[in-house]
Each structure stands twice: as structure tokens, then as C-alpha cells.
Image (cartoon, rainbow over all chains, first blue to last red; front, side, top):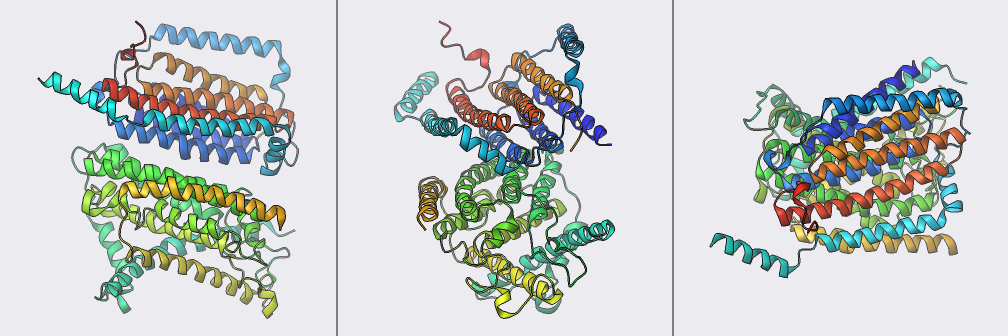
Length: 180
Length: 351
Length: 102
């Protein structure tokens, strides 16, 4: 029963991933991406990582995809401006899938131990306490660096998105010369 | 151990009770309260014709909305247009799952061990609520985009920018509460406030949290996404009938959720008063049925006060300008929230 | 909790990563590229958390945390660049972002 649930979720994940990657409109990709993250979160619940499952939704679905959707709405592009010579060649797709299968088959026969069921995790696995203990005790330096990276990204985005008055004047002049 | 059938029935009872109370009673009554208080503030009567004091007005409006012709304007992006109200309601309903509405109880001896008055016992409850409320932005953004109307798109843009910005401030305010109580389980957070409510050490956090939840629910003074003077009604301009009703319902149920969260985090949940517990005045909230009911009603009364505060603020304060809104979020609330974390950390180390 | 083998989880991760990579190579507009990048990072995360579960060691989930930090930064900076590209070219097709080609 639970085995079936896993296969269902995994199958839906692959399907939604395909739709994310190959739907023509970015907004559709973004919507399928939300579904994909929900399914990923379900997968994490299946393997017992509860905290990770909630963080997945909080950060990915609640912040990153919102940001992407926001920019898509902000640009509000015409369909003609988005599409442009994207084509999937069926021969290369089939070739790709065959090589994927070949790699997996080689793995399968070379290391059969991978196919054993995973042992039950410790009782504290996936809890917020165990996670934070590992993070603060063993990775405190990396944690600080990650925080610094976020700060740098914040400043960088501020600088990138800031429209300098001189550039605006320049583009105005360009527009005027075009109009003339 | 308890009989599993009784436990399942208890769970089912909690689900039915909680959802029927919130969607069937709190949201309609809130709509009525909102309109009556509006009347009071503006020196006129509110709706007073249907039922005693007009109490059945929301029911009448609901029936009207359901019976209305399901209109789909030409030129909307139809699948997304129909999906958006659903995406708005689902997070509002989901967030109730982890909110505890009473102390652990044996219901007057029906159970051997105390049972939680909470639908889903999630040990990351608070983070789950934050997640789910942040997902409610998709309904708004999609509604605006699918309506294919420039006012709707403007409303949706404003809503998503505003929700992302104020989520940061609210999150940082909540971090200090997590530090104080040492848990993200809402039940534990309430238990840790048995002596001292978190509002006292965390007063600055509350000052940040309150405007942030008003902005996240798109309520006045931050209701820029539906500013009728500039944008018609923003993202739900093109919606009518029950589809509009769903947006309305989700707004009021998210208001209920965030009010409950404010009470649980800062005002001691169902604890009686700071420094005075139910046990001190001789009420056993765990083992006696009456005591449990009293505790649940006390919690409901606190939530009702916060809901009233929403309405009160709406008819008192004017709307912000958009740049003032963003300035308040990023330049005032965010630094205060970070500063507050430092204060709380100092408080915990030295006190 | 479901009894699964690490191979099943790794297959899911690998397949999603391949789909993301394929999309990244084929797509022509900048926002879709960012979305495909998210897909690939997410696939890597699945592998991290699976190994963490296999060895009963939280280090994998800590790495997951660092990956989403980087993903958040990458999205924010990437979208700011896309906005600038749009201001400059009035569209977001990456074929037209060729000013540095010389």
C-alpha cells in the first residue's frame, strides 16, 4: 500500500518535472513547479524527514517560486516575445532515455546492495532538534558563511535592480532619437 | 492505551467541530460584525433587517452568491481563472489543522491519557502555519494574472510584493518567540507561557508582528492590493458569484488563523492571566469537562478580541501609500525585528 | 514511513536532474532557464536527504539547507539580471544577450 503511494508520488514528480521543463509559457512552468515541490515534500515525509519537508515548502514554494511568479507578472510578456525556436528532437530524446536506462542498468548489476531496503532511522531523525544540533555543532562556520552569502545577495540584488538616473536619461535620449 | 476507534471518532469530531465553527460561524459572523461596526463608526445603521440585529445577513448573502449565474468574462485565461479561488481557499483551510484550541484534556475522564485538542499533532506546527499562510499569495497572484485586466495585474503585483516583504518581518518576530519558548510546537509554546506571557519579554516582537499580519492578510491600513480608489477592487475585479465568495471566505478565515496565532504566541493561549493559572483559582482544565470548556472559551474570547481589533483598525486608520508601505516593511520593521532578536538573546543569556 | 531502497530514491533524483538539465539546454527564455536550474538543485537535494536517511546522519540535511540558501540567492540575483536584460532589450530571449560576444 505504502509502496504504491511511493510509486505514485515518484511518477507524479517525474511527470510534473517534465511539464516544468517543457511547457512553453514560463507561468505554466512556475505553477507546475509548485506542484513538483509539494510532491517532493511528500517524498521527504515518506522517508521520515519531517523538518526538511516543511522547510522545502516554506523556502521553495513559499518564497522562491513566489519571486519567480512575481517577476513573470511584472514583465507581463506577449507570447511572441517568449517563444523562439525551441524544439525537441525525438531521436535525441530516445537516445537520451536509452543512455539513462543503460547507466541505471550498469549500476543495478554492479552494486546490488543499493537495492536493499534502507534500515529504520534513529528515533530523532528528521526532528528539528537533531538537525539544529548537527548544524550548530559541526557546521557553525559554514552556517555563518551562508548567512553572509544571503546578505551579499541582498545587497547585490539591490544594486542590480536600482535604476540609475543617468541610465534612464540615456535611454530617454535613445528613444527620442529613434522617434525622430 | 486507548481504544483506536474512539481515538478516530475523537479526531473526526475535532475536524468537523473546528471546520464547521470556523467556516460556518466565525467567518459569517465576522462579516456581519465588520458591517455593523462600520455602521457604528460612521454613525449609521449596519445591516439590521435579516434576522435579529441582522445576524442572518451573511447567510442571505451566501445564498445570493451561490445562486448567482456563474459568469466567466471573455478574455480571461480560463483554467487559471477557475483555479485561483481554489488556491486561495485551500491554504486558509489547511492552516487550521495544526492550531491547538484548548489544553490537553481527558474530556471528564473519557480518556485515560490527556488528548490534544488539535487536529494534526505536528511537531513543527508553527513553521507549518508560516508556510501555509505564505502559500496564500498564489491565489491572489494567479487571480490577478488570469483576469487579463490591468487593474487586476496591478493588484496581484502589489499583493505578492507586500506579502513577501512582510513575511520576513513576521518571521523574524516569530524567531524571538521560538527562542523564548524553546520549541516550534504550538502546544509547548502555550505551556511555556504558564508563568509569564511572551508579550512582556517580546513586546518589540509583537509591535513588529501585528502590522506584519495586517499586511499579510491584506487588511486596512495595508489593503493596497484592493485599493478601490485606484484599482477598482484589485485582483478580484473580474470575479463574481461564488468565486468571489471564496476569496471573501479565505480572507476572513486567514484573519481567524493569524488572530489565533497572535494569541498563542504572545497572549498565553488559554492561560488565565500572567502569573495566575487556572489551577490557582481551583479550575481543573485537564480532567473536568467544564474546566476544559472554560479554557476553550477563554481562548476563543482572546481570538475574538483580535478579530475585533482587525475591524476596529480598518474603520479607524487611512490606507498607506505604496512606497510608505514598502518603507515601513523594509526600513523600520525589519531592523526592529533583528534588534529585538539581539535583545531577547541578551535577556536569555543574562536573566 | 515507507520502506524504500536507496536505488529507488536515487533514480527519482537522477531522472529529475536529467529532465532539468534537458530543459536547461533546450529552453530559450531566461526565466525558464532559472526554473530549470531550480529543478536540478531540487533533484540534488533529494539525493542529499536520501543519503542522510540511509546513513542516519543529519549532515545530509545540513547540506540540503546550504543548497537551498544558495538556490535562494541564485534566484534573487538571476531574476534581477533578467529584469535588467528586459530593460535593455525589451525581451528576455537569451539569444539576444550577446553583447559580450564581440
